[in-house]
Image (spheres, rainbow, N blue to C red):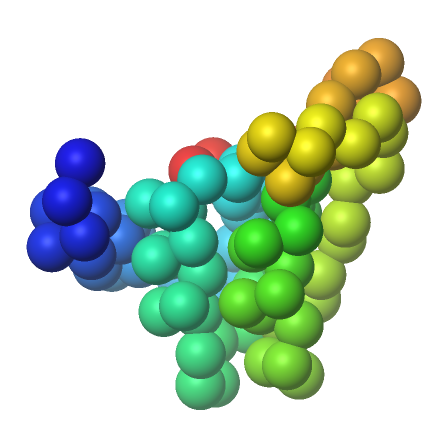
Length: 97
C-alpha cells in the first residue's frame, strides 16, 4: 500500500479518537502514520506492543502510554505471546487499530 493511502487511513482513524479514549495500536506502517497524528492536547491512554508506535508517541506528555510486554519479534518490532495476551485481557479498549 502506498504512503498516500496509509496517511488517508490514519487521518480517518484519528478522526474517531476522542479525549479520554483508551486505545490499542498494533505495529505496522499504517498504524505508525496514525501514531504521528496523536499530538497536541488529546488526552488518551494508548496501549501498544510495537516499538515503532512507542517511538512516535512517547514525547507527547498528554498521552498515558502502556507498553505491552512479551516475546520480542524482530521482524515486526513488536511483542507477542501469552504474556502479551494476558496483559491485554486486563483492559477494555474503546478503539483498536
